[in-house]
Image (cartoon, rainbow, N blue to C red):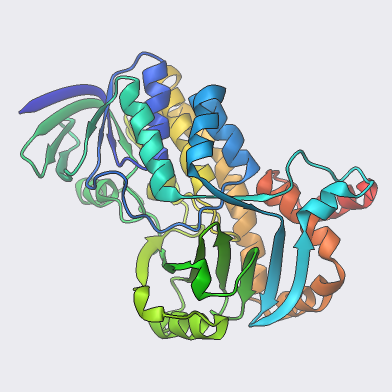
Length: 393
């Protein structure tokens, strides 16, 4: 069976769905091919920042957005804490920060955490409700870039005018294109994420917690999410001597996780700051989300970058083409490069010692940094962040 669409989107996660929804709202026909069925298992701590919420609202519209958030939001946490190993370093209460009589105020100073399988399912259902075609439980096996044709595992053939690669860190589109065009530059090697979701009765964790020095040069986390606690860690690509399974099991033991046999470890590759240098090819192939390396390395945030890059790709297909997409996505690259800079400082002895020494006495500044640089986003250099903070005190 043969199909033809203006745009073929490979991958039905947030980046693929946001691109498809944007295209449909502009009157462009499109199809999403997804190898899984929804709702699908997805490793993700679920951080859903204010900038993610604003982006999703612009994609869906306020009414649909409100319903999606109602169904997918698991919890909103006011307290986040940093640890050096298992020793408390600093704890920040964002709600208290909001209540202080200063100009450091935001509408909602809580950390929103969503259920990724539910969120992904709701987004792709919205895509279908708008008239989009979803071919799930199928996979792209081969792509002929010259003929603009994709062959699926089911034997179906799809021809297209535009191709959007929303197929994750291990993108089949990226591999196929690198084999077809030797000048195409792929992403560097991705990081490895290990994660489990534990029943809250099996571990004593509250709030949002980040643990440094569990993994060298990286971090681990434990996020309270309603009836669950998400526990995970990241091994960066150059940490080849790290036994992640042993490290994860040891971390869970130190957290006091009970009934560990109920929670098999799951792993996934994530491009932490591993930006694809040019996330387009020719005039009709666009890489978005994880496939383009759009994951912020300081926090591991990926949902915002997936949503925003998907929307950018859809708008560029409608109005501007690949050059327009490159211009739009440059902002996301800037945010990720800034995050990579901060993350790299934590790998250096002197900056990390300075941070660990001064963090306990500067919880208010850490709260300000989180609210302005992570929940919201700017490209301000560090000196300017400090200058703005001191002006607002």
